[in-house]
Image (tube, rainbow, N blue to C red; front, side):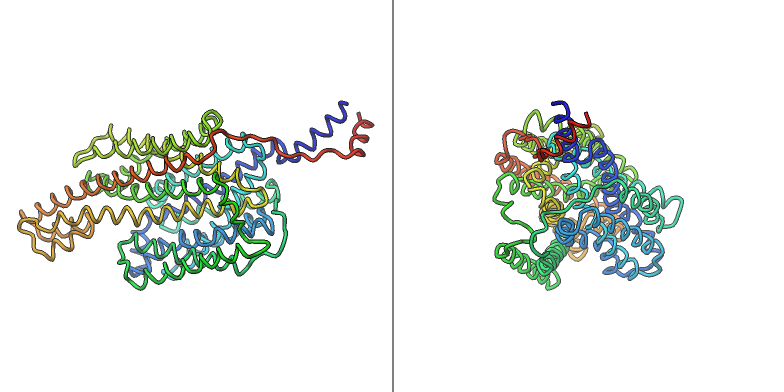
Length: 533
């Protein structure tokens, strides 16, 4: 009897992802995610140095900054589903190699075109790495309780990466040239590649039917067009502009054709029947809504700290650090909260707490209030990470294991789309509330008022050119209008978050923790085990 138990236990350990080694796998996956998260933000502080050295034009500079997230978002589904087909570890390791090579190319770029190409290749590498980390995590943690803890650690690392990027970039720029922000990736990739090859398990989907190459390209093209159009809207471009409207329309058409193609195929690239599961579709919607409500808000908050309160970029980063620490704490406590409260109450609570934080921040004015900002950012970080953790965990647990790569790609794509739409939507709300107040400032000519209505930074430049009482009046009016616009944007964001809380009511009430299916030992294996005992 003891021999039977021993054989069954051994099989159970193999089915659960190589026993204790799964935690080592988690460390490797978190290092991968940290690299991608840092690289998404590390260039922001290096833009002035890049501009001074390479002298890019306005369009080239825009592409240098935007091409990485644009390419990464458009290729997530392609590489997520390719990992399900050819092996998730294989795609991840290829992503490591490409990320390292592209980092070297970016660091040594001698003109804007080479840097744009290198950043695009970094986006390709990031698209290989991001869904692979989640799908491998889904594979090596079949027990949902352990997987919830792993996802909490994973999400905490993502929060760290987003915060570390600007700080690391600022430190490197104080001591080295701008290419150093890319060179730091290479040693980490040189370590991650052999360690990943040695420790990460290989996993695939069921392998039925051919991989839909045409569908993958349609998804990539459609997402590229939609994300590009949304980014242009977020940058203040007119909706009627052909360079904004054409990508949106073409991208939307390609995505519609992609959905129709997947529904007709016997072996689809992405099994759209996953969206028929309320927990999966609701989780995706919650991710989109959370990012839609908050990413644009973070951008506006950074402008408030620098332009209204007059803080330096480093001081601004330090003020936002409590948000990151609170998000880390929420990620680490997320597994315990999920087991105790269940997905429905956890995600709903996260949305409501974030809405409270946003409403608290409406008390911000023209004067610095460190206590208010600290309280608001801590609640904001904890609430947002609680929401995203619960949504990601529910989405990944609802997806079949063979579709883990596609599900992870859908989650990451919804994150990117929500962020892009949020910048466009809340940026438009901000501009609509900010601009009218500058139309009739005493002593300021109409052309100057029109120029000042574009942004607070531009208003300060115009005020400096005007000088005298008129310049002071314009500067004061612009600052007051910006604070008013910030309050309106916060109220709209709070409304979106409360809408998300209502949406979260469709999630399961309790966390279903079914034991992973284990293949029973064959009679011959049982007999051999008895002999060995």
